Image 1 (tube, rainbow, N blue to C red):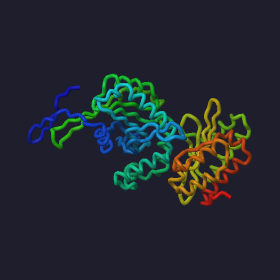
Image 2: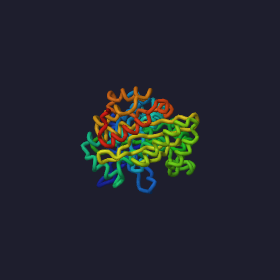
Image 3: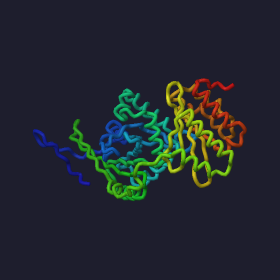
Image 4: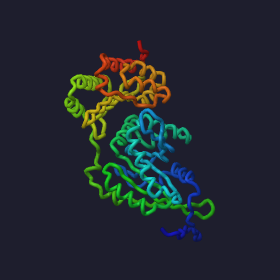
Length: 382
């Protein structure tokens, strides 16, 4: 890249010289305040892409039990619910060549597993509060009339399916990183990978010019459309077919009973991940609250029932979440996760396999009873 100045022509010609970012913090703050410099491409509707900041220094856990093991520089999202993970490095940082790629893939893999909708929503609303921006105004610009619960559920589903953008941002992109980005973009069907070279020019005073250059767009355009179309949501028929393939009749009975209860008392929503899954919203305190997700995975059957405590505490408060946890049956494996909830401020997804649930007499009935009490606001266990 040339170090020649750029020129601003007004009443006179002004030369702006190449000016690097003094610190990585300055670089990161600029992106957080002005995400428009990363807006390229369009949404599925054809509208211009507009990224909105979810959080800076977004924690990335590597298990359901522990806290964050990594910290992503920025997490953005667009109106289609596509998450955008951003890592920022200055050209003087030698990690920009190769190490940052492994770092980003770690973030993406664990974000897909351990970022529930409730955590993403709370992070976005906390960011709005820190920036002094009314949450209603931010949602209005981002979503229009789209329900917030539905939007964050879509973001979570896209993460689980690997439908995201990975952006490496630097003031100079070395050839080694550009080659890796273009290779990854050709190989990854669901995930788009870009390197954004953001060059800064200044006049020594207040005037600055930012010039973004995008690497990786050619590889994105060359991807097969079959891997990039709208995702198909899991249907009840899909779930029933997966249930019938389970050898244990008690597991089949429990899975069917859970889905029947969801259809009769709540609102089931099919997931878009590669495995079959459904999340269920139940009416409580005048809201539609996500309560549980049933996942039926292929291969060696791994069937998990997960409870959305992050969403429950967000909608109904800590006391109701604690009462719901105390009302659930003491199934081995689940009971230990429930006991750990207070130290995590109930921001977790404790889960139990259907096999473990089937091994405990009355466990299914206990789960359904706890859900009923949560809906009625009467979760104190008897």
